[in-house]
Image (tube, rainbow, N blue to C red; front, side):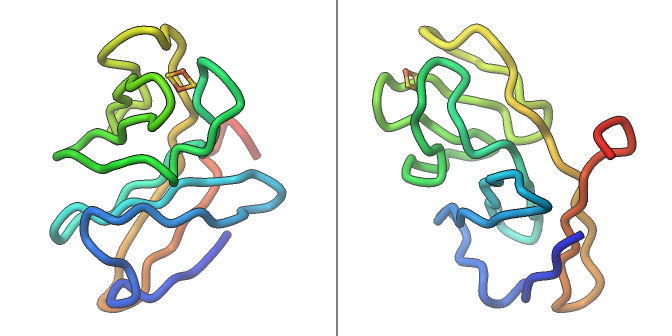
Length: 103
Ligand code: FES
C-alpha cells in the first residue's frame, strides 16, 4: 500500500511510483486518481513519460492509448491490457494498493 498527497498530483501529469516492487503510473484526472502499470504492453517503455488525454494515457513511443479505468489498449500497436491498481481518496490522502487478485 502506498499513500500520496492528492494536492501533490497535477491533473494531466502522470507520476511514476513504486508499489511493493511494481512500477506504477499514477494519473490525476480532475478530481479522480487512477493507477496503472507503468510499463507499456507493447515494449519496454514507461507510460508515466507519456501524455494523459481524458481517461487515457498515451505511450510516447508508438502512440497506443490505454484506458486508465480498465487498462485496456484503445489503439494499436499495443493489444494487451496493462494492470490496474486500486485507488481510494480520503481528503488529501490517496491510497494505492494492489488489487485483491495480485496480493
Ligand atoms: S512501446 Fe508503447 S506503443 Fe509501442
